[in-house]
Picture 1 (cartoon, rainbow, N blue to C red):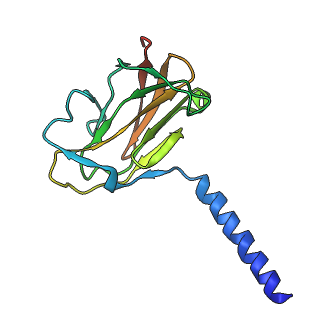
Picture 2 (picture 1 turned 60 degrees about the vertical axis):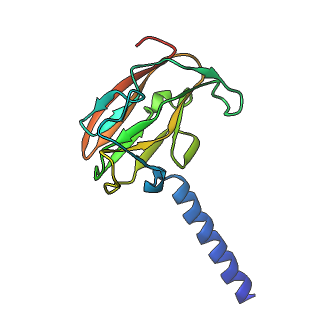
Length: 162
């Protein structure tokens, strides 16, 4: 009987810690980064807070998808971060979380917030990450960006003008 109670207590504790871990913001690891040269390239021409190269304000290639519900639209939108940049986080504002999501690196298929691990320089001026955005409609949406204690909101258009 005592063994069964210990097992149940351990099982409950494991469930509680898994639930707590599930509520934390996922982290994109450094092994998902690809070093790139002196410029992040034309795929991510907008520099945010001096450390993040983000998608342009209008995403030109939007495709219809049916595999990530409730989202029907997808656009590839890689980003790049300068090496040794601590505290990079992007998130969809709460009011938009049923309509917009994204995926980067090892995080997904559709999340509303993510943090990026601070990665050491690995041969490039930027660390690039594959990813993109999902939306329920073609829309211009806000995206919150935090880098090392500084915050801003940018707007991104999924086949819509901002």
